[in-house]
Amino acid sequence: MRITDTSDLWWKNAVVYCLDVETFFDADGDGVGDLQGLAERIDYLAEMGVTCLWLMPFYPTPDRDDGYDVSDHYGVDRRLGSLGDLVELVRTARDRGIRVIADLVVNHTSDQHPWFKEARKSTDNPFRDFYVWRADEPPDTSGQVVFPGQEDSIWEHDERTGEWYLHRFYKHQPDLNVANPVVRDEIAKVMGFWLQTGLSGFRVDAVPFLLETLLERNADDFADPHGYLRSLRRFLQRRTGDAVLLGEVNLPYDKQVDYFGGEDGDELTMQFDFVGMQAMYLSLARQDAGPLADALRRRPVVSPDTQWANFVRNHDELTLDQLSEEERQEVFAAFGPEERMQIYGRGLKRRLPPMLDGDPRRVRMVYSLLFSLPGTPVLYYGEEIGMGEDLDAPGRHAVRTPMQWTAEENAGFSTAPARRLVSPVVTGGFGPQHVNVADQKRDPDSLWSFITRLAQRYRQCPELGWGAYEILEQPHAQVLAHRCTWDDASVVALHNLGPDPVTVPLRLGDVGPGCTLADLLQEGGCELAEGGAAEVLLDGYGFRWLRVRRPGDRRLL
Ligand code: TEU
Image (cartoon, rainbow, N blue to C red; front, side):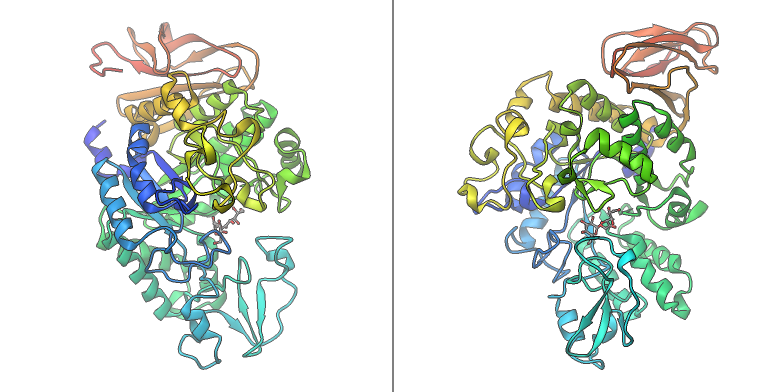
């Protein structure tokens, strides 16, 4: 393997960290996190081994969908700071070896966006065609809404002009009409603008919905919606060679392949593995590695110029929409049996540690899994210290509570009076008295220290991000054994999803005489017998990362 390749396709073994500026750190004491506060915490992220920071929307917004309702794509919301603060942040991050990407939300705008305000004035307004309208009464679309219980149609009647506009999400988020070339030019301009400030790419929001407009309109010159995604990628690469598009495509694997651009790999650079994530929760619920192993076996092998992004939690509901009804109920029963823990009939409002009753062995096993799965790991802020959720917060806000820095007032997030905070701090067993950065940073045995070590080991094992992988055969249903290999580098990862210790017999086949397995997360290792045979002991909920070491290997680990 050539280590220099990893600085080229840097995102193939990046450690990605997602946060919302408003809940991270409040520097000016107004109760809302801000860019200056985040800049003060850049060294914290660097220390943890983060190499790519994903900022959730920071654009001007009426904030009815946590900033995903953008009213100006070229600015920074006043509550968070200024464009200058953003550039200072990006620059400081870059100095610490951290690239910054941001949400690109162009499936829709806020209804307060000047384009929409214009568009709804009259049917012949120049901005009318920026959005998708219909003159005839729409059929019942209640089955197509993304937020059941909150919306009952994807069309909203607009009084003034008597027509209906399309909104795949909330009714205050009219969908942009990307079949209109002027809109497409505007989207490119938005991307170009942010790349110029130093961003290294985008997390692209709701990609299938964005392309759907093209399909519906069947615009002649864009009969193939993927042609549009290809053109976005080409544009991105012309402007900034090393920038990425990390797409949100919550679809089955066979559909996701198309969003990578198939074998050519010329559309999205990365996609979240929603299938693998959901299978992982089913595996955890059953204490049976089967569903996850099966997902990994089914996961399409994609172009070397693309990558899967693994995650345990994101800012939305923990969606289980790709499981069968029965499987979903199994996960609900194990991790969110109460109705107030569930949302939209398809997901959970919870974070991982409370779902696992705070069991540190299980929590660590899951994050060990996250970092060892083939692909790029994405952390959501607070996961590194094991934050919990606020079930009293409305909907998806349950997992959008302020970062817990210290055991002090407001978790050290802000000096404002508690009533002025952007959202209340978590209370109870997962509150700041028990879960905070300051305490965990001082403790070498804390979850924070553990996650930091995982990030470090992940970076030291580029075969996890770059290599080919296989699921290793072994007799225990509760154990996931997989191996990632990139040229002469190879790591075997073992995870025990069950409570009882097990001995895992391995047969690595191809390893020659004199090879050993070296533990990367603890002291020790083991000899390999003829045919690469080994017996590896795992504790209940235990895990091990074992690197294959060959005679004469000059690696330090
Ligand atoms: O989410 C879009 C989206 O497709 C998800 O809400 C998806 O439907 C869900 O995970 C169930 O599968 C993005 C943002 O992540 C979300 O916060 C926004 O509310 C939404 O777009 C609208 O902008």
